[in-house]
Amino acid sequence: MKRTMLSVAALIAAGAFSASAEEVHVYNWSDYIDEELLTKFKDETGIDVVYDVFDSNEILETKLLAGGSGYDVVVPTGSFLQRQIQAGAFQKLDKAQLPNIGNMWDVIADRVSKYDPGNEYAVNYMWGTTGIGVNINKVKEVLGDDAPVGSLALVFDPANMEKLASCGVHILDAPTEIIPAALRYIGEDPDAQDLETIEKVEPVLTAIAPYVQKFHSSEYINALANGDICVAFGWSGDVLMARDRAAEADNGVEIEYHIPKEGALMWFDQLAVPVDAPNPSAAHKFINFMMDAQNAAAASNYVYYANGNKASQEFLNEDVIGDGAIYPDEETTSNLYTTSPYDPKVNRGVTRLWTKIKSGT
Image (tube, rainbow, N blue to C red; front, side):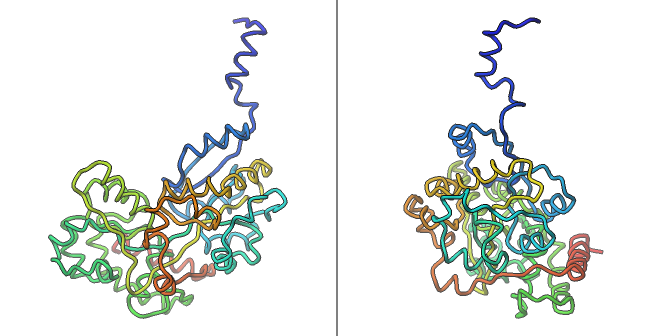
């Protein structure tokens, strides 16, 4: 049908010809942003955000190393970032395009420099810990009032897991997080890089695997919130998000998050630009937008994770900045550990071990 010039102009104004609009393609973890920020970015810049999600570092890495992912901004975890930098997967950030970089927190930047020397390739989006989420009432019903909810023994002692299976346990499908935790539990270095040490966790994990309802890296949020499971070994903010969803639903489910007394992994999720990003200029605009103090705070207030933006802290809600599960105190932080990426040979061994544990064969 023939259109008049007026109707074409109206369609353009309405954004009907979106194919011609500038876009930034972002690939982030699931349940990991306040979507109002995406609308705000579009309003401020005129750039459309095409936003996709993943729930494991392995999925992201496969796309990055295959090349031609089509993404402008991705969010790898620090240990994976290091290996991906070495593989040439990212371009260095042009910090002249990132005026908000002065908002970043030197304490976190220093820790991340273990993976990205000089912080040349990435800036921190969020950081947190990997620990234990519990439906406290159900766990106490099963294990009694002295249930070891603040210990790795809750999930790594098969005597506990056999009983907890009746109310449901989910564990992250993340070998680079669960294996170090199991190493810590048996008194080994969680950052062990040799297969001989790493394989010491096989009897520990094999003994509990039959009692794990699901190895998954995102489904435990709703499962905890709805009372479908009683324990999740997962990421701090996800458990706290489940806690909030349960409270909002007023369904009688009471969720707690515990950093294990034996110590926990401290991880860092980083904003980075793939080497073949279609629109690196828009990527820098998006990263700079997320480094704005109020925007970073809005993201943390929504997802219940700490961020590496010092300037954002004055805008954080008290139930975020004041929660020791999100911003741990100095003593707790001193007991957190970080891990390094496995070399290719060890990584293959870890993958085989994890597959064997999950399959039970």
